[in-house]
Length: 242
Image (cartoon, rainbow, N blue to C red; front, side, top):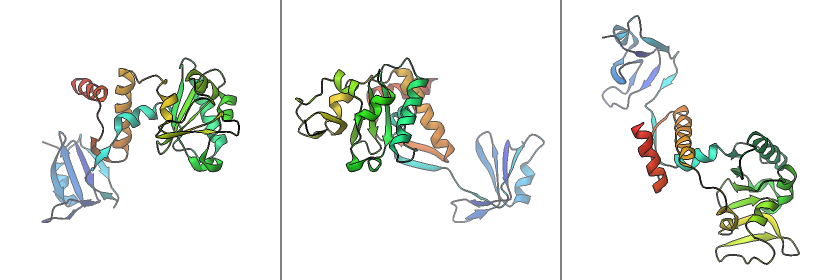
């Protein structure tokens, strides 16, 4: 039977000590059926075989990642994603405004990915978020996950003000009068973060699928989710059955 797919004229890393290199690979029904020289593998090529001419480029086995967070990261990628933007406050503000305009029905604007080095002392001010989203609370975790940036409405809804004490494991960044500036460090993140909406089942399902497509696009063909909570486990079961 002819192969469904054949990679030809490349440099194949086989991970086989007896034959560490080859030129071509044939695949039938999702399984490798031939590895060797292009002339040898061509015997598996039929009229319906899809041929990929590698043109001397390398072909390697799929990478596997033993510690990744596709569920949480996938959900975050579907929110206000600032991760790949330049470390520039104006770029962040523009992205938040665009996201808010594109999602007028969301009760909160939630996202992640801003860099501390974009701001003096690593402290982001709520006034910048107030200017672009004055009518809804905004809560944005920074890219290392140890701080958050929120607007005035988010602080008000969470009842966080000058009289709110710092938690034992965190800090509310304040101005000279004691009022919150806009940045919450470590455990203080929860003062506002706990008021943000939890992802729905459909959000989690979509997040896992979104992360899967991203990983596959990088050549990562298998992975281990390193933090599976009950909601994520239920999502994996749902997706597996579907």
